[in-house]
Length: 217
Image (cartoon, rainbow, N blue to C red; front, top):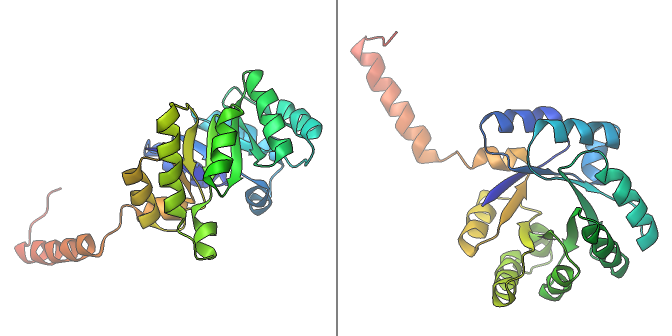
């Protein structure tokens, strides 16, 4: 499973990228606001930093305007994935932009039917939002499983990009189900390396080592 960092903070991306675990980046208007940066400037900086897809989201609501914004965003770098919402106009924009050779990430997916029609429209990525479904007492992971089954049934090439990931369990379950990609905040990605038994074991080793009175260096 590929790991995308869900952030527009360059420093956070750089830290993860040094470990070789960042396969791409996703941004959205809220993350751009949080970064405090100009969208074109920060997106270009991120694209220069990572080799994989960098999702940059349109803010228009009509198909023609989405297409215009998408074309401008796509010019930032070759690894831009234009992000459009899963609306009828968004699907029209997806079809046009993907037909022109652009990667397109169709976002705000909350049903298997939406994922099906996005694949038919040529989406490179479909972004089902797990956490937001959990918020309304639905199991977001069930949606990932449903999309996986449908895409495998018909050999769709659209990649499942699990989004709105809130916990490390979301990550492991998405990997088990077979999501192609997961995108999560850097804080969640870092927590994947944590386990209380690891901490306890390390603490015991350090106490025993101190008793030896030895040094390796």
